Image 1: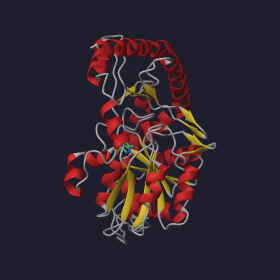
Image 2 (image 1 turned 180 degrees about the vertical axis):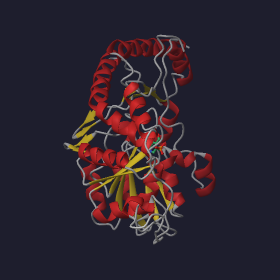
Image 3 (image 1 turned 90 degrees about the vertical axis):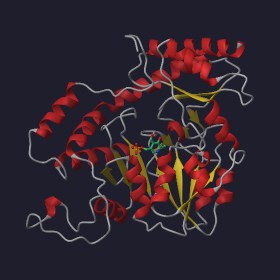
Image 4 (image 1 turned 60 degrees about the vertical axis):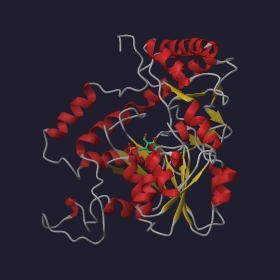
Length: 385
Ligand SMILES: Cc1ncc(COP(=O)(O)O)c(C=O)c1O
């Protein structure tokens, strides 16, 4: 890409992360240390929850959330059809069955009516994915789950700081799971965080992310002496990652303000293109984290997505697709459970016709306007072909 290229996502790292990493590497504690603890504390404060437990990825957090609750064979867990595979893989790791539900054509979030009719005796949990950062309708979800035994896990991989009715995502479910993969709102390279207000869950996740030891390194009276009291994994975040995360967290207000500004500028540029559907940044009581701007081409296929994305790419503008297939129709899930085309019409439309446009803090407002103009041109070109 040329100098004035605008990638879809770009980690915002500078000397401050390098200094923080060097400081950790110059010390003696690389795992189980104070930086991870400080990062967890600061993250819990930002989200407004009692506990935050750092883990090696959002996927690890999703898995642990189900695992510590004993989800296993015979259980069903509801998963939206339009999500990253991590959401359903976490269910599979436990030996339980993901039950896929179509999504709303207005937001890409789980369709509440379809979700409610999928709830049954075997439903043990619901994975609520805040699609591209716009919170699901948490009141409707809470009402639907109330008469059932199912608990709620929020997949907040793309929704840090998004709110519903003023409360942040990650505070509604039994747990919320965040991702710090490089192109997310903030990064630890790889990494994730589980948030919860449940003291017992927090203790179990902290234990099971570290093999099921009875006490952490700092709590051992005699070094090297511990018991293993449960089956656990090695899902820890190390001190280097935590140092990057803590530094990024201090810049997050600035990053989020840039995202909101870019999203607004891009929306302005795209206003009035009748052929496309732009998913809202705010809807009812939901306020997005502005992960990206989602523009969806018509259902009738009259505009070729490849043509649009290629035009953008020629202009040096990166775009992406979230997600490239309804998850139940991806080979693994289709072969395993026999899902067929036509069962998830909205997710199928999105998978074929959605384009994610960049609004990250690596863009200036002028860049966001340039993306909008290039997109408009691309739509005109592609509709003529
Ligand atoms: C909705 C969703 N959940 C989970 C994940 C997985 O996150 P991680 O790579 O931190 O495991 C992603 C990754 O993009 C995602 O989009």
